[in-house]
Length: 184
Image (cartoon, rainbow, N blue to C red; front, top):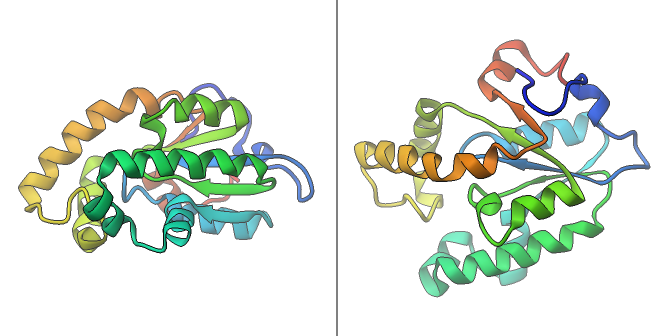
């Protein structure tokens, strides 16, 4: 469940209330970053932020509207700007968008300014989660299930080198099976 560079129990990675910086949850869209981030923040008395929600609030548009009206290049620019502002956040868990780690040296910045946690969700689970709410995900809104499957496989291949630079790698499916105890 807990892989790579961190060998301590995950519970020791969470700072006590009153100290520490941010934890950046990264992974493919629909991998559970917002869901698990909210649970962990509540459990450990940390503040939870969803980077996409911060962008939507600042832009007064949904992510889908930003993609449609301004394009992906503009979105990636403001996404990085929003991410850099999180440097001021302490005792926080920040759920990042699926592509956040892959642009503008964001992964390096997150590793230098907090702890990164990659939620390494399986492709079939991601596909099922996306199908449930694909209309709110601008990169996949008009795709058939087969097209989504191919999209996920291709994007995952492109993004894994970035995601694998995380300090901690977790398998969310195992978290759901075993609960969160023992990891937090």
